[in-house]
Length: 366
Image 1 (cartoon, rainbow, N blue to C red):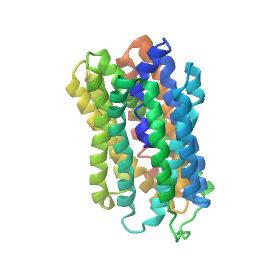
Image 2: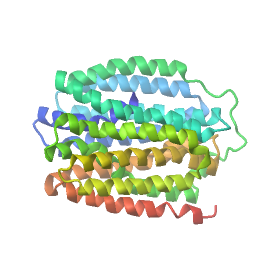
Image 3: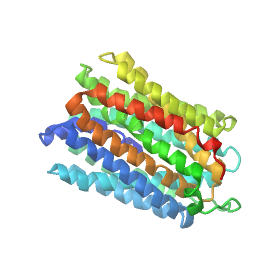
Image 4: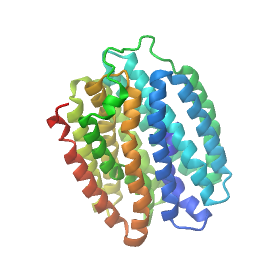
């Protein structure tokens, strides 16, 4: 529910811009800001869930999501979305995601990587369903009513998740290094920097596939399907990884996922008006996302244990928040002034450098 709402924002981009009689440049940073709140709240919520428990954190996320969507659906000025949608919806995702991953990591000692990968399939499922449903609802009722519908479903489903969320009865503290020591680790800091640098390449397709495809003559429904393809391919890949993940070296898997993301961006750059190449790029994005996204918690669990996994993974993903700011926020204005190809070329360069950085942790000694 969380990621279905958040990652379908690209479908809302043009309708919101048209409502407020502006271009996509001023609207795109709403998504970037929401993602930043997601990661900042994730760092705090993950730590709290490690110490207090998962249920209060998920309950807070439920309130944030429902209230944020209601307020956003009633906005009469663009800045209302910056004050309503961005902090509340973004923080809701942050409250739910790291706390759930940390809890699952502590529940499973054997096949831990597979369990985490299976839970993360929900992220892909939301990304698959959200944009397609959003396109249908926006075409029928408009973007305001669509947010209202999402508010109702979020309130119900996330309340159920709150009651279903249960902490592990036996927390494994034998590998507790302490969050502060983890965050000062050289390996953590290098991988954090690499993720911050590559974050713009990850979020740019999610924010701009839809509008770029439409500008090349692709129909609105077909363009909306692109983000859905990301989600669908991600779900399939995550389920496959769930069955096989324990056979992989987490850091090798992480680097391979980053390389697939570079391939995705290269195909997107070459797409032009070819819908087939747009689809191939979206497919690569979904698979790459599944590969590195499921590897990240397992990398941290392998390096530092699971006692502080919620806090460490929540803090780690704040790097993507910086990438999100550099991605949709800045690239929206680059696109307005210089076109999509220039913007894509920028994120290709940053993503290649980020991938190269991922080889450094293996050479570091703590």
